[in-house]
Length: 162
Image (cartoon, rainbow, N blue to C red):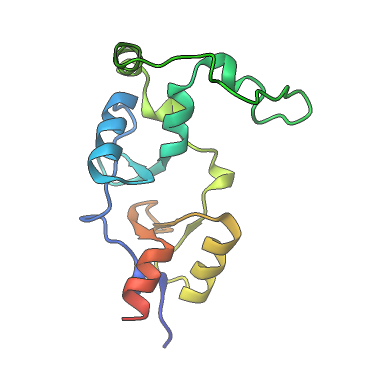
């Protein structure tokens, strides 16, 4: 039998995760400390809820005016530079203070942007999903919706080709 996504995954005991009701400030600290690009959002019972990403964190740090219409190309007026804005350490600390009240569950990536597969998915399909979505694949047990692990380009290279 060929390799499955389970064979090349980053296991849950290694993959950093976050609870849905944790604050964005907590997510920031986990991402900063682990240098993760994303955090699977997992309920206390292990159920997969979604994904919080480092780019979302950066969007939350930017001033709201800089992101208005960002996902709607038709109405977006390009801002070529934000050099007129300053960010001091005090400004950043104020942003982090504000993000202590924002919840991860309210700032997760759109589900359509996150590939999800069963652990027994053939590794070739996992490679295709990583290529297609340009990001990690979340492994979820189909019957229970329990988070199992993640597959990334690096985990594929580390585990399948070693």
